[in-house]
Image 1 (tube, each protein chain N blue to C red):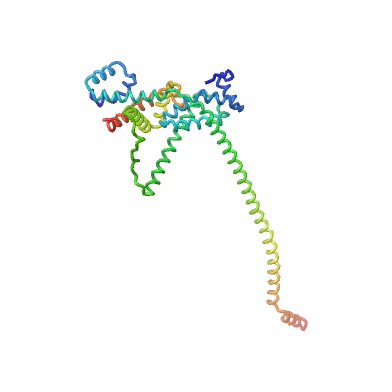
Image 2: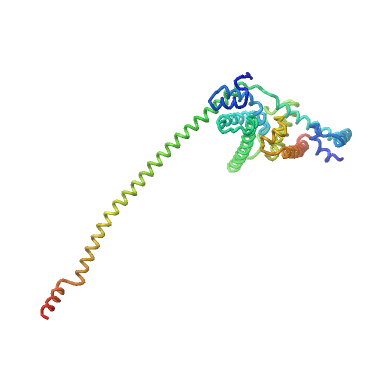
Length: 199
Length: 147
């Protein structure tokens, strides 16, 4: 990323964006894109979907830049948007999958898993990694939204408890509690997955 | 501690967040139990995958995709605004036509009423004539004169 001396502070970046400076927006996107994608990936466990949501996050940042009041830091605000967009995406995907299920039942299509193909073959290490990825995805999907958000911001984004509390609009002790419960629940889910698939 | 109790704490052990007695108890159990060791390995590898997913990847075209999406959204917003204005204009014209129709309706219904009123008055006048026909009027007049 090319450092641009014009945008030394967050207010410089925001002023630039508000005045329609494309370079300011590019600077912001390049600065935060990996963080935002990582956050979104933590929620949806799919690179393509994470990229899609991340694009929406930056579009929202641009369109709402006039409304940002500076009560929190710019990164906190961006993380907040990323978390909300990701949770909304999960909710809407869940509804779409449910609708698709209803449609399939209504059409009397045989509801069975797709047959395996050669594309599914992969060497042992890839298979193991794929199983582990599936395990964590399923385990994360079972978490309550608050626990999921706190865990992802901690584990995927490496934010401190104070930063997570800022993003989620809660206290540090709540964050500690949420992360502790998230880990306990992940433990249970991963153990169930392990017993079912790996033994 | 049995395997069930150990399993509850293995996630925290795998993350190296356990300390003191709890840590040493688990380590003692792991020395004896192959099943728990296997599950611990699975946990560590799964958590390592998360760390691998955190690696920064370069995507030089990401900004291009973002600006394209932004431009599409702005254009869609302008299109929706134009459509909204046209719907508003159509609604205003429709309302004007209805209001005009109602006004004209009131205007015409007023003149019909006055005609009807005049007709009613004429009818009541003719009815009065029936009540006292001309002949009886004259007969009454003659009687008064003779008296």
